[in-house]
Amino acid sequence: MRWRLLAHLALLPLCVWALVQVFSVASSKSATRIAIWMVAAVILHDFVLFPLYSGLDRGARLALRGPAVNYVRVPAGLSLLLLAVFFGTIAGKGASSYQAVSGRSFDGYVTRWLLITVALFGVSGLTYLVRRRSGPRGR
Image 1: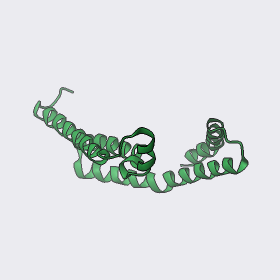
Image 2 (image 1 turned 60 degrees about the vertical axis):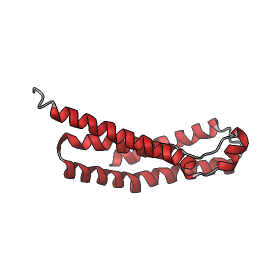
Image 3 (image 1 turned 135 degrees about the vertical axis):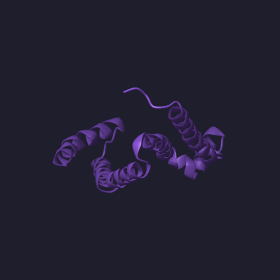
Image 4 (image 1 turned 90 degrees about the vertical axis):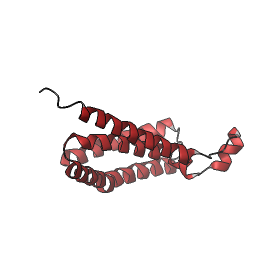
């Protein structure tokens, strides 16, 4: 656990510097806000999200036992990744700006995300059933 803290403390200034360079931040106030945002992200991940998803994974491994857990873990992870990336769009935030610029609307993003999630779990379930029916593999 200590090595993780040391790694974060060592790499955090590098990440802040990279973000300041990428976004061409000229004022120290904006650079300070970026640094605060990075520290908050590290704290949120390491002390809230990491224990949460580690506990969920451990619970899934205990409930499903064996290789079946990966057939739930992979589509769930991909679905959550898509949700995290497109959360603003799925939640409808910025719809008026998006429509003004592109002439299109946000309608259907929730439905498409749900359909992709169903498809991911469906393919994963079918793969599990096919592999389970094909019998044990040679060791």
